[in-house]
Length: 285
Image 1 (tube, rainbow, N blue to C red):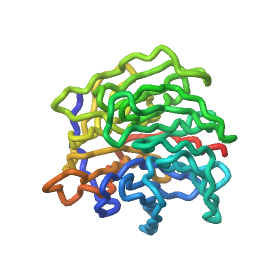
Image 2: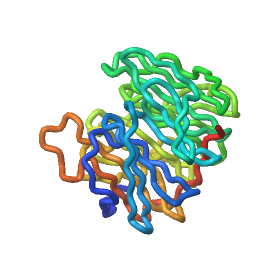
Image 3: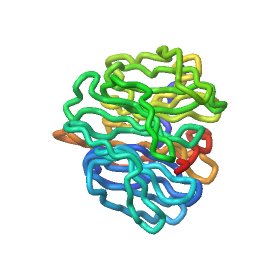
Image 4: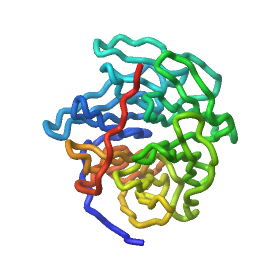
């Protein structure tokens, strides 16, 4: 294992209650991230420094770019589309009392794999579903607790997934259909925090943000821990590569429930030159 304390920078100083979901939008050259409980969508242009903040009408679990422009939103009551002219419409609405959206990812086929969870984090109260561009929905995992990080290997043959309370990063075989042969890639030690959001780099290694651990771990495709990036904010929530060459690692953080949060808690952090990401697909819908 190689331990690294790569210097970080504060890309956007903020006080997000639950910062999450960093996503590089290659079409616009900006980083999108959200505050789940603050119901805010943030964007950041690292070249100009320009920032925008938009408020959603309900709690939001993830936001991803669409191939036709605009955004797809994983919201408390379902999945919606935001057009380039800011027109909003529901793609799939499924309001369930006590449940909200959580992390989501776009699959190689352009569908959205959207996670949910209970507000009270009741065991088995969440799901992971595939939402296609026509609004059709397929439940992939019906009994998860806190559906979180999802990502694919560079060749698309594997999908990685986190149900946070299990402390595991699981891996499935994937051929474009239903994921199969679920098995643990790694189990995170209790003193290292809980696995949260993740991204996969060009070498096929999995980078995982650790809730309560103040760190991002990189695991090889065999599950070996080969890099640790320590950060001052204890609630590190998710990570993604961004920038024109996809070498900068952006990390979201949270401050929810903390009596004395670190000054960077709730901000968007960046580790320049941390590795090499891969271009993420946009939602086809």
